[in-house]
Length: 365
Ligand SMILES: [Zn+2]
Image (cartoon, rainbow, N blue to C red):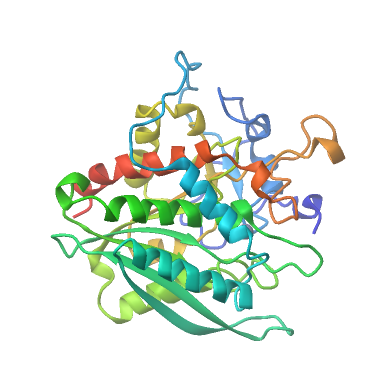
């Protein structure tokens, strides 16, 4: 649907607290201009629901960057991660239940095994509100890196792309970018000893199927894979083991800006943001808050700490709408292609997660 059709100032159903919505907004250093337009702007452009919004927070604006950001010295390979995005895009549109997604999944499993990880899958049948696809076979992919402790830190992305009837949607950013970063994080962390990793926790790299709505993001027509994963976790009595869940989504935009996601566990979101700032990436972690419905919500509902790193201002549409036109114009369109992304954005997120993990592990026991 056209972006203006989504101009709705509502809230997601499962929002846990009342939001201090305010028409005030302000421009922050380094943040894309449209982000600073405030609540309505992201109200137009929401993850998968017509209800995401930006909440200006009472934090001081960042001072202008005084030094050029330095590349963090982690083994996260930006170019390798970028090729993992290209690899996914080469499969074409990859909606849940498609042959292309099945092929991608086979490749991902082999890739994860080649890092020395134990890989399992979690197949299930999802009932959808679609007349065309009333049931869809879906399959989560889980790669485990055992630690000295049974406690689990979980790093996740969805790997399906949205089914589009009228567009060739290849999802370079959504969800190619985050899938690539989780794969590269898996490779890097698997190559480290527990001492090098700096924490005893077991790591799980989880790739959710069926995050995208089959028809429209409402009710249960979304987050099929993460909901199924959490149900299984609870049924097996294993939910207590998961001490923190870090979700990545849409983090490849060359113009990267990741506000804090409002529903995310504050301590976890804070560690991730602070780490980004410590690494010299502060301009990409603006001190603003947005509200996004995503795969972290089933974890939060189950009492598992979770945080979503997502840049929901993916491209401006100044061609169609003039200067300062609506942001997130590439989201869920045929224009979500690799030329909009940058390897550096993948590295910013990869480095930040990598450096945040030992700090998260100290809290998450
Ligand atoms: Zn999407």
